[in-house]
Length: 342
Image (cartoon, rainbow, N blue to C red; front, top):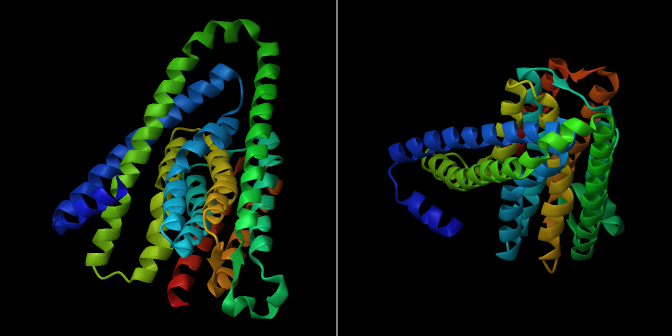
């Protein structure tokens, strides 16, 4: 399917590509709008916070493009693209996307989530960096890089199963506590859950299908305009696969559901480590290569952005403010510029 879309896009004149990009962005926004509205309805029906819904159901749906790109890249013998997409998406999610959402409006914080899944997000990022280190030859890591071994990728998938299991348990516990306090209301709303889940599925499908058309259209347009391949790979692929998270976060922030945006980004980052890089490494006999630039720039960027987030969560009382958002966006822009210079 992806190859057919690329062949179709490659044969179109540049003005038509611009039209496709504009139309795709419109329907991507519509899909995100449906997803956010139904996610809010589901959180009200289940009695759990919007951040919990964002960190579980919504993040799984919006991370599917990263999974598809990295897994297919690894299967086709391009592990560098698979790893770059995973790491670049984390930087894009927590830097650009969450930063822009915080600039649109302060993002409400659910303490139980940022103190639980938020630390899992940090732990997953640190684990990814440590797993890629060549401990037998640390002196050359900034030049020769390292590798995410196949066995570690399989271990990541085991951790993913444990994380999903715990997420389901935490969601059930939160729902049970809320139902205990308002049992009659939940009995009245329980009939609508299947309808809400169906609409959420349609919203996710619209987002994913539109993204599959938008990504090759952007790449082809950039290539014809003379944008270097390095910039396309380092920025457009990661940004393109993160478009569902971007549109979902901005729509949530604009509609006053910023806690859903935080949950979506936290969950997506965890999945990018455990699912995206884990599955891609597990499919590659030699593991995923990480060149020197990962240790010079990308891994330090992930750790810095996560550090800024934890400081922001710690000092923020009720919401993540615009000052933190400005730092996050600034960090993303610096990483993008430096990746081109280096």
